[in-house]
Length: 63
Length: 159
Image (cartoon, rainbow over all chains, first blue to last red; front, side, top):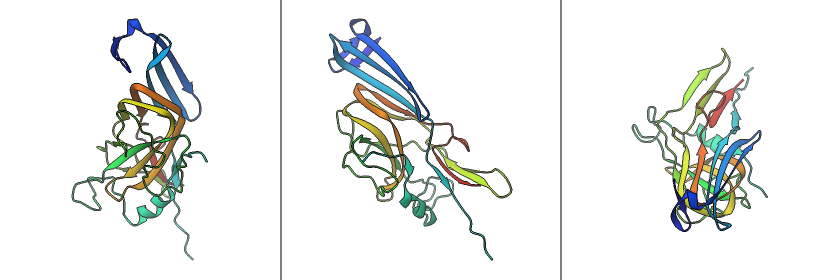
């Protein structure tokens, strides 16, 4: 697979791959990093938010 | 001061004055045209929160492949409202596509996206925070939640 890197497009067989996730009450995130000779040349992240701001509306009582 | 997830307070009042138009079916401003909403990313040292009234380039991320002001939010689904009882209900809206910043390099850590209305003087809508990220020659994706009464990105509720 071809990976876009800071050195140009490279085959992933030439790179060291690291992956991780964050799963907490606020988000589920996955990330992937590719290294060339210990140099970070690609990092992508995908975030799914679990919480959104919420607005309560009120209609006042009359009388 | 850190960024904080919130509905922008100015947005609340602007809803009552029909400043924002998320719908192409019931347009407030231009026939059959919803306003254009954008999504800008901010670094972790910014102060974006409920008091934010409009987009600003101050402390916005910068880097290869990222244009100041961020990306346009895809809005193909008009807002929806559903009654949950005879005295309560929910109005809700979610962008119809994920927010994708493709082939960018953002080396300064960021943790916030501001949704704002670029058709109406860049007035702020909402602030969404997440864990600190950097991107190197890669893609940053914010996956949108399901557009339902309980999970939509923006929800206005009576109880």
